[in-house]
Amino acid sequence: MSPRLRFILAKLALAIATGVLLRFVLDLHPVWWLVWIVPALPLLIAIRFRPREARWMVALAVVLGTSCNFHYFRLVMPLPAVLLSIALQSWLWIFLIFASRRLIVRYQSWWTVLVYPVLCVAVDSLAAALLPDGNWGSLAYSQGDNLPILQIVPLFGVSGVLFLVTLVPSALAVAVAYGRSLGRGWLAYALTGILLAASLTYGYARLRQPVTGTRTAFGIVSIDNPIGPHASAAYASNILARYDSLVRTLAAQGAQIVVLPEKIAVLPPAKVPDWQQHFSTLARQNRVWLEVGIGIDDPRSPTNWAWLFTPQGELASTFEKHHMAPPERSQHYASGTSYNVVTVNGQTYGLAICKDMHFAAFGREYGLRHAAVVLVPAWDFAYLDGWLEARTTVFRGIENGYSIVRASREGLLTASDPYGRILAEVPSSELPGRSLLATVTVTGPLPTLYTRIGNLFGWICVAAAALFLALGRTLRHKSSPRASENRAKHA
Image (cartoon, rainbow, N blue to C red; front, top):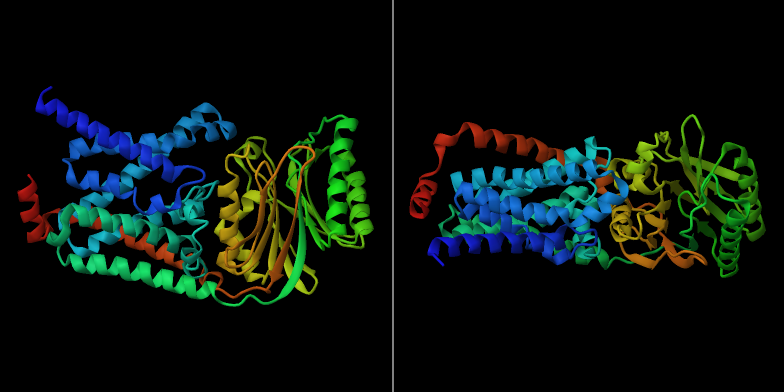
């Protein structure tokens, strides 16, 4: 085998290995600590190899990585949309890597370590504001179980976590590529270390704060079996009777508030009054607050609702889902616009449904309304995305200082506090279903900086990214002397 062929095969092996590792980063339940390391590899390849070689190596690695969720995408989208989504996600990774490379290689100065995280946060912020699925799958959500790091969320939201989690691999890539030869490199490495250390120190200190408030028992119920608009009476009755039984059991165990999942049934409009009466009676007989997710198969436009009943059986509030999942968008579901709050045991409770909590702007509205708890009926996809959807929802509670109680079909039943601690969690199941009794110390709303300023940090990064991109295209002739020397050495 010729040396040239061995070199090509070595590059191919490096690209494939990088792609395989990226799959653990981009998976629906990622390995959180790998997220701090693996993205350094494609960035390092882009820096150290000639552009022509680097492009195909990075492209191969990224396509291998982003295709890890092909099966999941296929569940929610037609095949052409799946292929387009993977292609766009791959292109975005390639763009971020090579836009960062342009400035890192050209200037080889300490400040270039900031380019990659700034561009990542900027793209993430634009996606959250403009796309129908928001910034679903953001690398920040990979840290859903990393509690110390999550404590910067009340300050800077998802953008703060994403900046930090992309700054570290950027610094690693630059350090391996240039080491001490980087212009004032000690500033880049010190800055990264100081920011990481400060975040961890603040996080551990915040988690040590005592949690005080009213201890409240929540019941969470889920049965994965669906009740469609054309379900037989016997089939629907069997599932409904099991929901009733689980609610009664939880009430007997002390539950004060019980949450059922999203769209436990999709009803023709004519059946809505009967089902409302049924759950009104169930709430009154068991003396519990009861939230129920129901779909209405209105021929003009389907709708997705949450009904909240008082212990007296009164319909206290109805909430219509704002943000639709891809299957609902294809079925032309109507979207709600209101933010519903109800006073329960002296505290303010908010209502949301599943995908609504993917959007930080939506979650912040309940922070502005001083919610202490948000109740979330949900329906995930075939158990595949349960962890990601649950942790994305928990982010909203951390950002705005409220607890989350989430009941999902084909996912997880989850209760969390305003610090992101998972207080109780179990997977859902088909008949006979699954229930969970969770005791939550309802602290009242914890004021957060994020609630006051929103994603200000993210929009600052959008402005900085625009400057970086402009700098990369218009000042090519002003490379630093050190960068010119280093390029000559590696030519």
